[in-house]
Image (cartoon, rainbow, N blue to C red; front, side, top):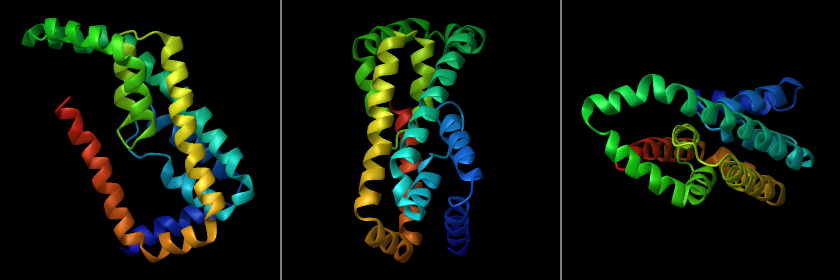
Length: 194
């Protein structure tokens, strides 16, 4: 687990410099539309290194994640007709997709909210929301509440329990990395069954 320790130490060191906020912005934006690694990999060490900036860091992650969500939404709108629809027609699944689209419009706010708050790959939801043309206001409100809720809860926990949390993370970094990886893979595996 020395590789994980090096990444963790690098994130802590990076979190003290000016480039950290830009890197967090880039990771949070990209994760909401195409990048597989969640921004927590930067968010947590940044808040642990600078707890007085916790709200600012969480706010930036939220803002970037929502902007990235709009990019994912645009991917769903503009690339669906070009790539996905012909494939659905070819395999005879276009009618099933229409059923899914109706379901998504009925429960879309809850789907976006649930995915935005959990380790589920949020990019899948942003792209799907664009593909089914979920109401943009509904998408925005659910995204703000979910992503903001997630990042600000993490910020509050780390700000409140920072020193013990930092000790816990550093002591159990190997196991926490494995758990994080399992949750990430589990989120992608869950997509197959939806």
